[in-house]
Amino acid sequence: MKVLVLNCGSSSLKYQFIDMDNENVLAKGLCERIGIDGFLKHSPAGKEEFAADMPMKNHTDAIKYVMDALMDKNHGVIADINEINAVGHRVVHGGEYFSSSVVITDEVIKAIEDCIPLAPLHNPPNLIGIKAVEEIMPGVKQVAVFDTAFHQTMPEKSYLYALPYEYYEKYKVRRYGFHGTSHKFVSSEAASALGKDIGGLKIITCHLGNGASICAVDGGKSVDTTMGFTPLEGLAMGTRSGDIDPAIISFLEEKENLDTKQVENILNKKSGVLGVSGVSSDFRDVEAAADKGDKRAIAALDVYYYKVAKYVGAYAAAMNGVDAIVFTAGLGENSKSCRERVCAYLSYLGVKIDNEKNSVRGKLTVISSGDSKVKVLLIPTNEELVIARDTKSLLG
Ligand code: ADP
Image 1: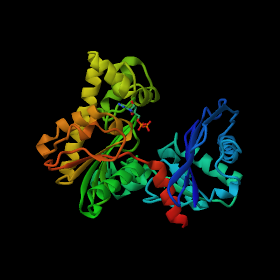
Image 2 (image 1 turned 180 degrees about the vertical axis):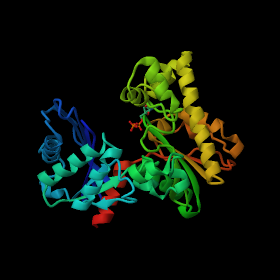
Image 3 (image 1 turned 45 degrees about the horizontal axis):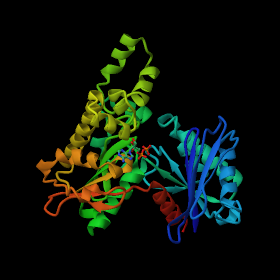
Image 4 (image 1 turned 60 degrees about the horizontal axis):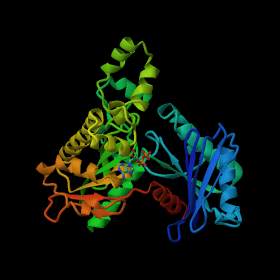
């Protein structure tokens, strides 16, 4: 079975085409600037990369170009559109409707539409992608894999905000969590790598990329996570503030003569390590500046790692213990100093890192030393593979 995995953003579309008989990626790529002008980059396995400007009015145009690229005689990997057996979509918000992946039906589309108020920037392009596939490949089965689904196992005490209960009842204002596909994947990989049944493990997964979240996974189930009603809650991130005192919002509105939307934009796009350092949202740039002694870059990284360590401690408390800590995503997989700095806070848990093993990048590795009470692992995440696996298992 060959599965096309689509991740549709507001003006972009990322794809992978995977042969699920052997889980080989046959091609991957991305379309950018959809609705503006349009650019396609297509990387077929074992063939030369193809990149070109292409006019893309909408996601339907973009998906048509992806089909053309997949079937092209020079850089294509299939001869006929019928070789795409199924399509798996990343869908950001499934609200309280979905606790696992589902085959897309009219009812599922309606439920994803109902969740638009919860993810106004993300669910609409996800739906456009689903409808574009229906138009271009009528009859091809599609599956939705939700960022929120894995966290639907969180108990009430984790997901309720201490707000008047009526806002939960009326508007579903509660904590949902995101990055669920990644947390589920790396926690299950960790159990396999340790040769243990996940049912008996307490794992803390740290997804540290530009967007970042931590999840407490008890017995294979998410019991708490740092992102909340939106992906703004929790850790400091590339450009997002993470947790702040909510009173700061009206304070800034008054002092800077801003409206709520403008402050929200600052919290999402101008804060985090970018905001504190003034250097960049890319950790490589901030680390380089800090190495040269830039005080604000040093402060940005201090704030960032301190908060990661605090949440690891919080989740060890929430689960009354921790057997394994996992680092994943851009920073977690690639930055030795990230893992070192977080773990330096955790000696009270009996965490010990093996310096040599921790020098690895982007490869599944147990980086804790033999006598560490808690196993620490670096595990590359692979959300596309999870989407393709769920698609295959639902469609058989
Ligand atoms: P997202 O999917 O949230 O956009 P990624 O998981 O791709 O993000 O992570 C991107 C982040 O990872 C960037 O901020 C980048 O600086 C960081 N990163 C990637 N490689 C390294 C590295 N070698 N050292 C430090 N940070 C890195």
